[in-house]
Image (cartoon, rainbow over all chains, first blue to last red; front, side, top):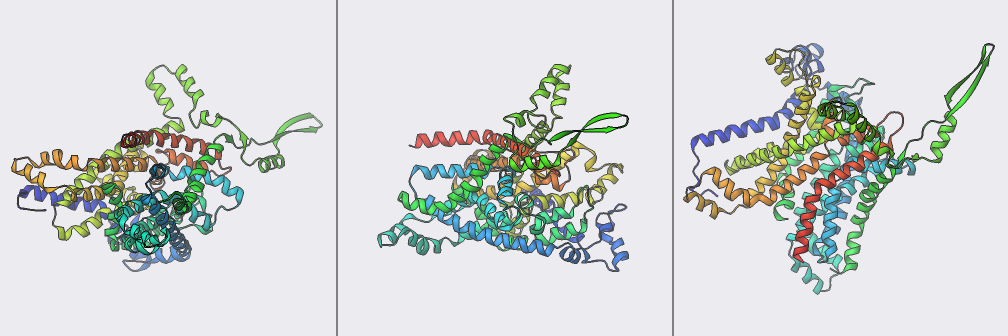
Amino acid sequence: MDYGLDRKSTSLKTFNTVFIIVWLLIACFPFIWTFWGSFKVRADFFSRSDWWYAISAFNTLIETGGKFTTDAYTQAWTEGEFWKASKNTIIVTVFVVSISLFLGTLGAYALSRSTERYAFWILIAALIFRAMPHITLVSGYLFPFFQLQIWGILPTTIVVLVAINQPFTLWLLYSFFKTVPKELDESALIDGCSYFQAFRHIIMPVMWPGVITAGLFSLMLAYNDFTVTALLLNQENHTMVPKIQSYLGTNQHEGNLMWAVSAVVSATAPLFMLVMFFQRQVISGLTAGAVKG
Amino acid sequence: MPNKTFFWFFLPTGLAMILFIGLPIISTGIQSFYAQHDQVVKEVKKCDPFGCTVSIVVDNEETTKLREAKPLGKFNGFGTYVDRNHLAIDEIKKFWNETESFGAFVDQVTNLPFYKALIFTLTYCLFVTPNVLLLGFIIALSLNAVARKIRGPLIFGTILPMIVTPLVGSLVLFWMIDSQGIIGANIQNLMNDPYLSLKSSKTLTWITIIIYGIWHHSPFAFVVFYAALQTVPQEPVEAAIIDGASRFQRIKHIVLPHIYPVVTFVALISLMDNFRVFEPIIGFSAEGSAQSLSWLIYDNLVNEEVILFGSAAATSMMTIVGIAILLAPVLIRTWKEFKTAR
């Protein structure tokens, strides 16, 4: 894009560099700091006397004999039962992603190949559903779920998360399916394929980038959800995010802040790794609806 | 695609959305017209040598029976909507008649729980959305100007605040800003005020949550704007350079008009997301001075004694109305475009 026409002055370049560095500091430093602090004891990371203790590890040295300690991690994962929460998160995430993708690809394919007017209205309805705050939906679920006695268990939560996720998945996959030329499946239909066969053998093989993007977003929704999992699951079945909240403590019982810190790092690290690996897909997904649509 | 094929392809996802998004909204609507039962009371006559006294006690057995027979509660019509915790019609009338100045009246009204939450939610939307658009756009322009080779890692760093869940994001910031954290402690030193803390001031709490909102949502605006910037055609930009347009003029007259549809898209999405602000309030433990509509619903649903289904449902319905008002301009525009396209 640079043809030599657009010359930037040195001051502008410097300003630009400074701005980016400052922004990256703001964006990333909190995570680096939390990661660093998770290896200290509470008296250092939340120091009442001097914040410099978090760096010099004054109390960590006294309490554990080393500058770094993994006590918070071992305690949170064993005593705090974070292993159970992460097991639940894995179950929820795997099921939500696979079911969302299965339902979403079928529905979005139909929407992208339909020329009828109702397809347009379905997309608008999906947009309205997308705007619903999750907590208002949860207030609708709780009472019927209590009555049907399906509250508190993982399958209910999985189905709810799949449904909440559908509007976004539909929009995303719809815009991806639109980029696959119609002639491709039409020629398959002429050759005697049914719609489902054309979908299964002709369209899906070229749709993998879109499916991966949609899968990543379903994964992030299921992995990150707080509202639904905190209110629809019982203590035993809590996933990671509500578990972190329970470590914070309430007015009634004292929490364990360092457990929360180490749990935050444990929960965030896999997500960061995943996004680092799939960065291109995340960005194409975020822009698919905007730039093309 | 024939209608029949469409039906079978769309059935699973359609069913999921109707059952778990459509029906819950209806269920919320029905629940909002009911309120939890009052406790059944009975009179107990106690006699001792000095005379008889009649006392009123709660009949637990009857109360449980009633609750089991009608779990939804008693029919309350629009009662829940107008009570003190929601629209508070009676209270407002009273304040209107009793207070002397308009300022005092506004003061009284904004102390009612529903209006307090509404004002916080709207303030949050009003400050976060434009700043997100602006900051996202500036970051996109600025990253678009650096060498292509190092952009990858820079983009990764930029989108980090967006991919963590709001609860974790707000906790991570809270632990730094808290009076025992690195930033909080340094601000105390700087201001020379050992009692300065986030929790002590309502304004400070609001500002922190708004800053958090901008921090969390800007990466989304950035990503979309960045992608849109890649599609800006080069010829008009070059022509403008040759004509002597300044950098600012080029952005104003060529880049912005080109990405305008994307700007409305980002504004709409971030308005929808900001309206449901809830998790940061828990992350910053700011319940005392900042409550949003979503937080009110959550608070009713985690109530210790009885879950206040009716109250939560009424707030939910009013939140949905709020969303509808926000979306109305977009929907009307789409409808008009759709009609002219026919």
